[in-house]
Image (spheres, rainbow, N blue to C red):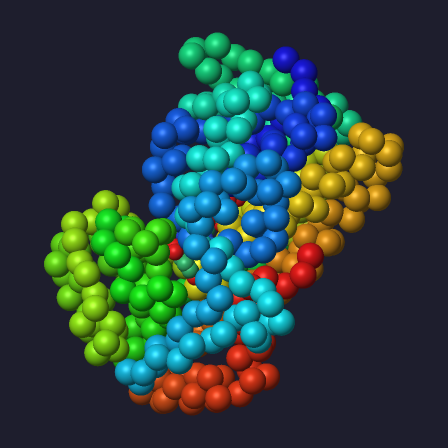
Length: 391
Ligand code: FAS
Ligand code: PHB
């Protein structure tokens, strides 16, 4: 088989890229380790920046998002038992965020790809291998239904996440990796219960961080910080709800509606960046290139901005025979990545309880939060990073 761009991974990055390239008349094939249902079953991000919303529209798949998504103009910070609203819209001069789950983003993109009859090979397992990307005739090989297959292409887009094969295929001496692992995780629970509040609540408490989020007016997503070694099987639904209550203010505790979990999982938290993002005719995008702690809701949104930069560079290559865009992809994407990494690290450091730092750490966090909610400058800094910095 021959295609112009071989895309590894059918998560948001791979599907967004495939859709943009298709709309520009550039042929592409997506290879995905898992089944489509498995990909849809992973519960992940919930908040889209305007950049991601615009990209969904550019892909021609924004209709359901605009109909079912929830525009949020503010978030709440809860500390010392009190909630304080950060007015995103007024502090940023008009920007907001869209609450629309990553599962739905992926569903919309998968449906559009199938409707266009574009080739996606699911359930390739760990069979994908990348070859010749240090030259101009890269090849991707994979096995499906016991048959070996080969794809000749012009470029390979590694959109296969943190544990994917793409970054792992780069010679060790050609890549630099920066990583920070946080000493805790997020225990997340999804339930068909109405959200406790119409906006997200980020809580800093002496027991640890909590987040009240949602997927719709009838489906909620909650998180509590747990120790790194915690196991999800140690947490009954009742234990989760009881712990969440202990991290809420009295009004939210009163309003909380509980119910059986649809999904419960623990996600580790890390900051990670690989540099550069280009190796000859192989490009890395999304979680294959970087990971942020989810506190700032940047993971999916960084995948979107990477894809925006990469797609425009590839389109320019084919349409205008210019390589300026792909030559500058890594530098452009990394500039935005590092700013989001910094914000996600800062917000995580401010909101979470770090073991072995003593009671003074809580007092210093509360002092910073008290300053933040009473300073227009500090609140503006939070707001403009939260809604997403310009491309
Ligand atoms: P993805 O990981 O979504 O997709 C990569 C795809 O490549 C996967 O479908 C995988 O199966 C496939 N793949 C991997 N190896 C392959 C191989 N060898 N061959 C073929 N295919 C292969 N972000 C937030 O903003 N908020 C959150 O709350 C949040 N929670 C998260 C929880 C977890 C457990 C994880 C892992 C991430 C979370 N994220 C969150 C970040 C997440 O939303 C990512 O940023 C987003 O999925 C990035 O999309 P992709 O880059 O497409 O990577
Ligand atoms: C979510 O709804 O899953 C979510 C929202 C905001 C975050 C992280 C996760 O910062």
